[in-house]
Image (cartoon, rainbow, N blue to C red; front, side, top):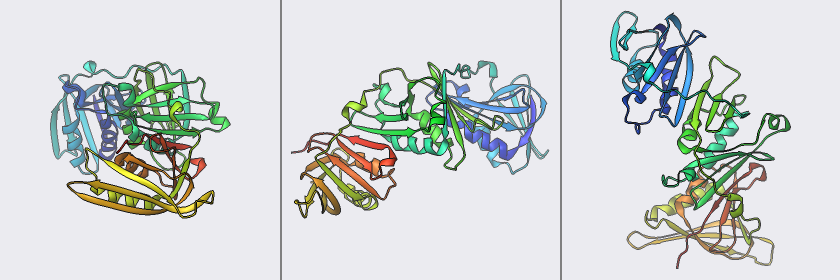
Length: 390
């Protein structure tokens, strides 16, 4: 194999695919990046940790075909330190990689045989859907943080993606809270969902996909699904420049989360999102990690009105730190309530909601609560369990 390609293209390609590399695998070859010359006269880069895989193509001048797996760290660090310009890569029969930069620099890296590297098998796609990268990126951000870190319940460490009548639902839960986003599809987009689907994908797969997606308009992503795998294709219409992320599907039954979403509420509190976030950030300085609890109490100025002005009072008391107290102006509907939450769970959702106002919906001090953006078109809800306190 012998190719010449630009330093910039190589850096971009390496930075893209190395996101799939994980230190969990003990086999050194999987800490490497597969380079191979394809029939379309481009260099194909691919890496995997056997749970997810990422590949892309970069333009190059092809002199001789072949393939090799190059250790990621030394290869990536070296190419990044070269100046912009052309780089020649040549591999001999012993998988020794020769790297030259304009005849002034020469390096040798010991590689691995590409035959010993297991790529993701070809996916026989049963159904696919195409949507905006920005919409999908925002949706991942709104749910991913709620997934579990408990490896004993692997199906909760993932994120559910399923087709519904309105479009697609994305959900994550750790059994203490639930984040749910509905992506509404137009009639034309709905027609692209050839078969109904429901899959649980690893948290890490969507976390790395989030880094690859753009918030720019007019960029699309295609999701292709089969029985055991999913492939995400970024900008599928640009076949020569596309990026693909492969992921295995987690086996297991995701909880029926619609059963825990309340339909009616006894108390609704409307708050300014930025003010609520800032005051929560201050008061959580007084929270200990082992307790991590903040108490909330609603007060209305005029209980005769259906919606009245009032205050949401936040209170934290930690014996070896001190006390903290905040009063936040709000609009109140319904009953007085006193309730406590894990402060981290509240802060997690406040960091990702960017609407001007927010609603906290409650059913007493012991039942699931809901936090939503104060805009129905958001199609997003966050359900969390309160903390029982004396």
